[in-house]
Image: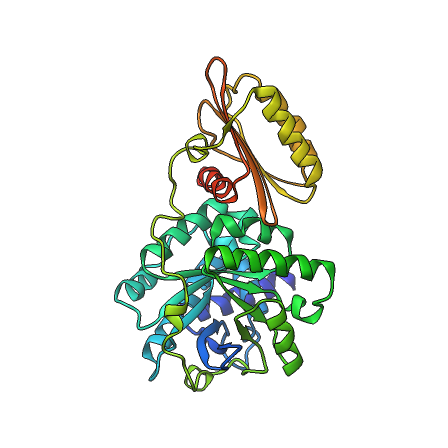
Length: 382
């Protein structure tokens, strides 16, 4: 019986993919001050009236059939096709990227649509689930999106501390606050998230969107959390594109920070990215790193050490890894370089060493520099 169900599900998802039967719906995103519609988010739906109509079942079926990547590409293609064909295209179109398949190549159809010139600015949404899964692929895709003149958003911010840690690494044009923050704004978590996001928005010019705005009270909470724009049933439920946006703000794309081609691209080794860091001795640098780790138990730690090691640092690797809760050990370390990064909500610490006699050591707590070191490391990780 189970095998028969699997075959039937595989047949259904195969039919959806072959017939391009994904039919996105669109939900408005509005300016909280003016209530003008600044853009639409495309939300995937399967064939109406079938078991695969709703996205959880649709994506589960594709995952079970080993065709998740194909479905993700089709959803993006259909969203762009419908928005391009709309009588009044939205100023901004938000499209979701499935974290599990960010390492796949883009489909020819998707490339064709983007390179033909879109009548709107696309904003590609990454969820925090993509950060530990395929960080290198995420950065490479972000670099391509920027190269094409579009933007990125980090979605569901506030669900996991890792999303706050990676904000300065990605520097998205848009930060989307998870709806749980609107529901419970007075918790210590919500206050911390709001403070970090507000600081990042001020530092980088990112726009902040609150999700799950369903009532006028929710709207007030969203503004208190620092949101500029909002999304939720108060402003409209997902529906056909022709009815989703009735009063577009044509100036919306200009409110986003301009794309920065090259920002997410690989730029030298971690040691080179740490240029300007303080030169320290080995013992002093490792002692400082251990103190930071002890004080930041929830921070994300990245470690990189070549097989032949770096004198004075290799022996410290197991000890350092054991102190952290979330550790990413870089798969392809730079020969002759040791690097350790501790990055948390709104702060960071990087130690980079290059093999010599004695080793050259650079330490920095400047957040943009720590983020640059982190990007250099993640480009060497799948």
